[in-house]
Length: 390
Ligand SMILES: *Cc1c(COP(=O)(O)O)cnc(C)c1O
Figure 1 (tube, helix red, strand yellow):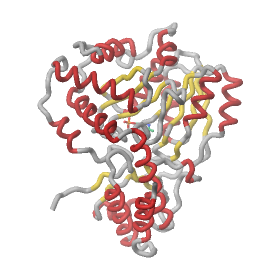
Figure 2 (tube, rainbow, N blue to C red):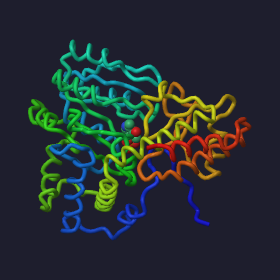
Figure 3 (cartoon, protein in one colour):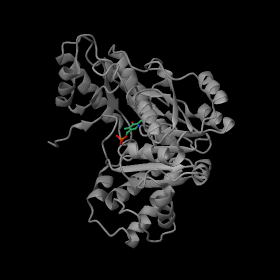
Figure 4 (cartoon, rainbow, N blue to C red):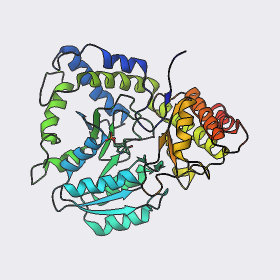
């Protein structure tokens, strides 16, 4: 029997065999023609996946936090003001990060499981002289999705750069970076992009690059400085060899394979598939009688779900039982409710059958913990959404 337990956490996720094969291929030189071609193609494909035809992609070895760091390091100068819209743990991380670069940070905090009111954002921008605003498209600690569209529009209206932390969203949640006026959208390889951990990925729009070029002070981080990386990205895209820091050759080849698969599926089809998976998982959770961290299904993510444990059941008890039944789920992350909820990732290569197997494993675990429900209701609810959804 194939020994495989489904990895259904909000990153890293299950990866496609072709992507893993690229990762295991013999490593070439970083200036070998076939690698230059793969890197150049990956950069071109990022513009299509981000839906940002005139953006500048950056691919740098590191995790999602480095992508956040690159935006902070390049876009703020000491004493400038930044507005952070926080819907959980990663919003708080962005506030801390920007302060490290000398920004004067104001945090607008959503109530737990909720979003920040647009009127509140607009009032802050109107009075504020902000250089930039950050939003977390999907905060992985709450499973809350923020609608980037009106925020991008406000950023354009008030001349404030909009930075989108899309680590749990890009290539899963609908995102149209350029049409929505988002100045920078960033992610990491291991989430919906579908490549093992190790790549920080960002696409900067025209206004973001202009703001960087207009800086009065040098970027206070040698490795993250776009001045180091922009010529490298331009060279690879022009299919010329170049060097600043050795690129993670195999990871970039794997990235190119995954981006090719994402575009072969098509962005619209992919967005719809994720909506369907999200709705199916959340219907199953509701049918099992579990509450969810997002306070309104309208702002629940489609890439992940965040259910509360039922009364009397703990993570230490439930999660190993679910794993033994075939699916690895994640515990809580938000400090306020860490021990009270868990998280299920359903992004990237997740198939309907993977989700049904996961809900089945969850039911097995819940039953083993003594939680009472009608066996099969969760799987049936998910199945109904998966078959009836158009
Ligand atoms: C995972 C995640 C991060 C951090 O990414 P790392 O690769 O773990 O550094 C940042 N923001 C969000 C929304 C995430 O989901």
